[in-house]
Length: 444
Ligand SMILES: [Zn+2]
Image 1 (tube, rainbow, N blue to C red):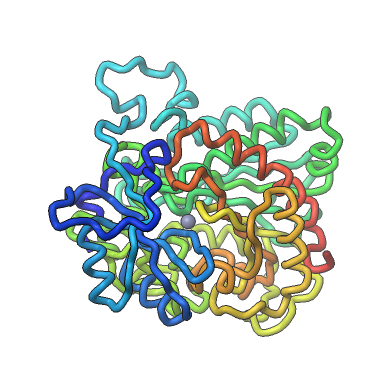
Image 2 (image 1 turned 90 degrees about the vertical axis):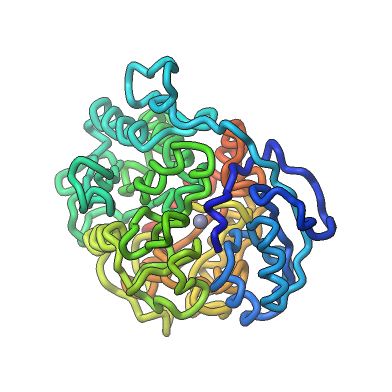
């Protein structure tokens, strides 16, 4: 698909309720985007869609949602599907890039204040935030550089470091890159998919919430006295850098590796959440470099994947059972945030089974849903089979209990910034709860 060439910014502010609309006319503006509802009653149907189309992270019964322009309807028809227009997404012209890039705009005095699209923080702002917290709370915060983005591996003057921060009331040996830590670890990663703007904002807010609440709020104090909370606010900084340039760039989901993920300038990159080497390429990803779910030319091909795997093996002991048997009382918890289904899910994502640790993992997800009202269940069964993900790898290889939250995000992966307050209020209790069970997730 050449969708990205014509992609224009989507926004919940301009969504037109259009359920049941007939298909777009041949005269429709090719820049006009639609969200198509597609009936996919079997795993085979779902896989066919995921291989060829930009399938959104949402599901309602047997209905999946495909993002595309007017020609996408024809392509879906040729593939044997009967799409209907679920929503018409009106283009926004002049979507603003980051403040740094607007000629003549007042420049923030400090990179921490650099925003785009009405309030979302840029990569530089996120990293300045980590530095500020580390400086102001040295007794709690340990910043870590765990690798380089693809662009930085090619050119030291381009791209970004890959950065995390460890939060705990520090005792000797805490936050060391050693899997035999004194305290259990809760690792939260956000914005592996660059365009899912709300995810990174959850890390920003949670970081402030924890460091500002220590010593004042009993739950926060107990948590940081007993647990290491690791935050990776921007897993995919090259992708987010592209998104923050505004306009059509805001549809970028993947990293920016144009060697492994060459697509004639459009939809460049690899889907970093389909690239991990556990059951890689076994469904729910695409072998086409132009697809938004492109899994890469081989497992673990991307610098961002390799660096995060190395970090995980420095944080967690290797206790996985390849997903074939219940793990046992393994400590630690990995948590990823995406958008926009409104769901809490856990491995397996590689098939539609409940998986060997369904009991405790489903109880935890159910508790999260009691706060948010979201759906919950195993990934493959609840949304669709998707292999090569961070969480399947962490569970299969390391035995780490993993959860993913799909924020509701006002129904759009790039909603107005004002949407974030609602997602934050709904999900903060789930962050605190998840972190609190990191010591014994499989005994819940
Ligand atoms: Zn995502």
